Length: 367
Ligand SMILES: *Cc1c(COP(=O)(O)O)cnc(C)c1O
Image (tube, rainbow, N blue to C red; front, side, top):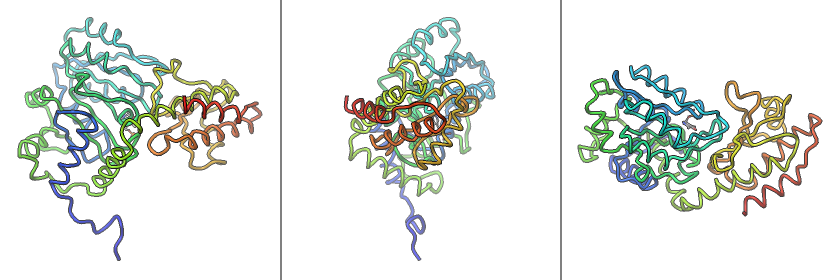
């Protein structure tokens, strides 16, 4: 018996290279793109282990939980790490980055998350890229939560390593990711004796055996299902148009924010300034005394399937994430989330105005 996921024809090197080319087009990059066959933590760890070494000094910008993970990898590589931490309800500024670079002229690596789905903020990468370029450090960007949701121009912004994953705004699978690598980054990796080689974490292996070989022979059997799913989501984005996809995400964020405020009941945008709020997902702060995890559980019991989740770790008590990304960046999904949250708050005895919330969301969507 045939099955849609099974008995697939082998994925050819030519088709693999074509998918890479389409990822490069999505990122408007002329740099090499390496598709990594694993969740985005694979290229992120690969970039850090290739770029950092004993003797390196890294500026690690922490605007959410992923920054903490990067800092741990950097220290594990023997690098000295300067952590620039900003409160999760805000974004980092180019001035803060510039000051840290001036205080530590030895910094040769900068890691930054563009948008944080986990905390709902987005950082001004174009401005930060300018100060990093002036300083001369290698610049790694985690753009997993921004790609497809908001403008992302790694070459124009001086990003040496731009990591993306398909599972957020691209609406694709979580098991495949990609990174664009600047010529400067390749030089830095090649000069690092500690960079992974002959390893699943190795980006240099892909450079030497795939890219430099003219993209004719893959290093191992490709992850067919993930590659086909990545190809399908690129096709869908190309058909809708990347600007339209980004527009949906911006509208979903604006509608959710306006709707939550109009709902009442004490819900507040977690990220104070709207321009620092990420288009990929909107985070909300619950009023004092209302546990976010319990509220989300109640909302999901009545409306299973709406993309609501409580914050991770210590944020679980006070943060609600509305994950309006991919196909969920849609007006009816935002309305369903607001209705579900309103119902859960009302159930707990908090006065809310669901009709006003839906109306505010609809008008913000079209604004
Ligand atoms: C979602 C996301 C990732 C990927 O991590 P998951 O644990 O698979 O969700 C990486 N970086 C950022 C900034 C993300 O938002």
